[in-house]
Length: 538
Ligand code: HEM
Image (cartoon, rainbow, N blue to C red; front, top):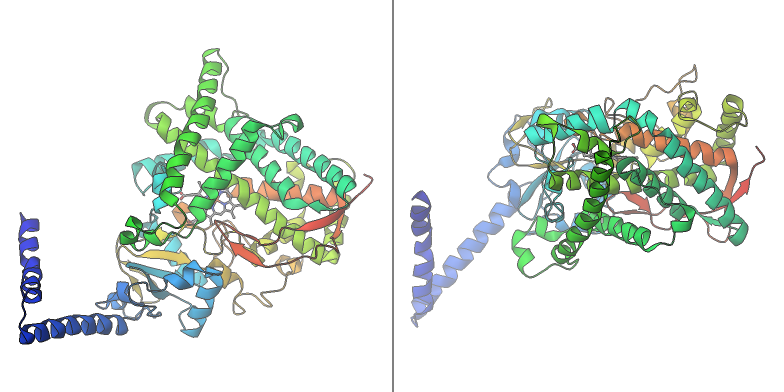
């Protein structure tokens, strides 16, 4: 009823306007022109007087004792152009610095109000607030059914159940430890393939080896499936890689319709909708097939042990924890595409820094030889290697894989910050982790790669990267912190240790290192690393 009234109330001017348009009277036409001009001027004024742009009109940025500053951007589009081209984290860091808005900056993406923080204290307030435990749902995530996966499920009973399953089953320390044999297997295959590549080509393009190992590793943990050397060129593996790549592209693509919904009717340059529609049934078919195989094995009486893969774990859940098949597909598929490129791309950045800093590489090799000798490196060695830890953490600082923490948050209520600002409900919030880790007020010489900065006088690393110290929180923080952080850190540390233990790495002079980055779902090297890998006699 109230809707009808509102419609009638607001439609009077349309009828009046139509009557005027139909009129031949010069005076009437003059009135129309004046009305249109007044509307346009009001719209312009409203935009011009709203720091943060149109989505922040009506003083939305002034709910607290301290207003939130920000750029107006363009009418209608706001700051969409800033974010959709180039490196958003760098552009936002520069604007925040110019506008004196490092603590918090308001801006508009179309009609969406957004804030971004480049300050550890405010970032902590945002990420740890219970009112920021939701995420805005991108069209691609919705179309790919990811609203039922951990990363995009809205804060509520279902999401809390998924987080509980993740911490007590999927990523429980005993389960991570139980998958060591698989990690060793994938790593050994990677080292063999690198040696073969080097001897055939005289150079190694590292990324493809890291991605293959990452995919095998995550396929092993999630589906209990690994691809042997003979299957490398198989149709099944090609199809799987293609699906992971497509999911990654679709979720990473900057989709203007997420911020200007009316645009989706006639402008979809990346064909997000049709590509999602094509991908979903392919993923479903593959994952359903794997679930079916597991069900058959279970019927034949195989019990779920710690070495069990994620499918077995999800099938073994009972009572309140039991998931239906569609939800299982969403959760499992999310793990595959999240766990693959993050680890591979971070390792590529680390190896790049080690090639550019031979003295750091030599020092790490010396630590490995001293602590491990010439036997194989195991998971339990990793915590005895502080210089390795410093290298991995310093690389996470210089090249955070998600410079804007990949996934934004959404406020479900007005959030009062300690600095006096208030972020209104329904605001998208981002943390510019790259800006924090490159802020000279937070880190000395922030653009320099210096693992030594993280070592105490006793040779330990005290900086925590798992969300308690917001000066370096590449896995996010708070309730939605990355559940795969321990697995990610362990996998990357083991790979780097083994790569440096087995080979000496130098720059391939024909393909010099190029540090240009490109921001997709993760920040990756625009030009993949080519290196010369000289095998050591261990
Ligand atoms: C170097 C490796 C990785 C990095 C840098 C990374 C980074 C991140 C970041 C920044 C977030 C958002 C956190 C927040 O909003 O506070 C996130 C969320 C997430 N990550 Fe990771 N991640 C990595 C590896 C992994 C792995 C290996 C998995 C699983 C196999 C994984 C699964 C997830 C999931 C499911 C979420 C969503 C959590 C939620 O919304 O509740 N990540 N990750």
